[in-house]
Length: 296
Image (cartoon, rainbow, N blue to C red; front, side, top):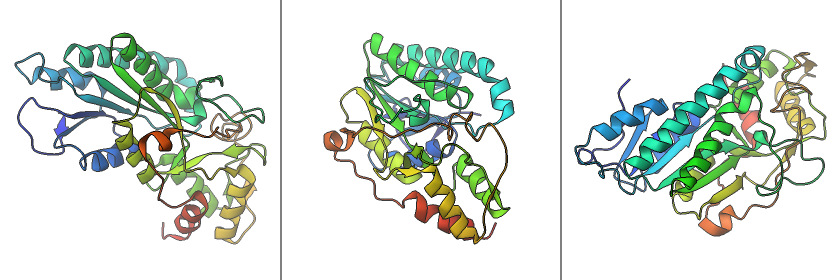
């Protein structure tokens, strides 16, 4: 698939190059168009070379911002089997992307990562500078994107990493699986009831990406500031369905599942204070109530 420009612009001119094809990438492209005359979106990192080679002048991408939009994989046995292959593939592809982008003049990279990359909070809010990460099969793309951001910085560019909470919404495959299971009477989220889940609506994550184009380099936790426990998520699903949900006994969604097996309470973030960004979308409870009751 050839790169697609979402706005008309002079040939060879690119303000933002967006890499990704999931729900977050689609929403980010829509919001980025509000701040720039040019957003070029590619599905794969290797297509960046095609974008760069469209220009005769090697400096035609000078000042460009590169956005890597990643979405966590839903927990599954297949994802676990393919973990090592995916990890190597993403790391290699993103490294090539970064070197090409810097070579052709890009000066900023925004890596969309996930709070699910953290290890369990251990009852201490997770801090981007201090808390360890624990990459797993479902977060290999996010981990590789953060590695690309680090490489971009060593090459002289500015990097911003956004560790999002659960980016919920109709475009999110994890949301779709949780809702579909609840409609059938099943409970997918089987971690400790008191474990925390940080959340953010898809449109709010997209506007945070826009804000990150002006943010100081660094790693930021980004959520809607309304964390919920896993018990609370299941309670609202039962409220919406009007029935008690039965456990599905899928270990990849339970205690061993990286996304909903651990507690991920984030420390207060200064992202909003530095950029003026504020979430304005629905909270996870409102979304799930509406989503479950929608016709399938």
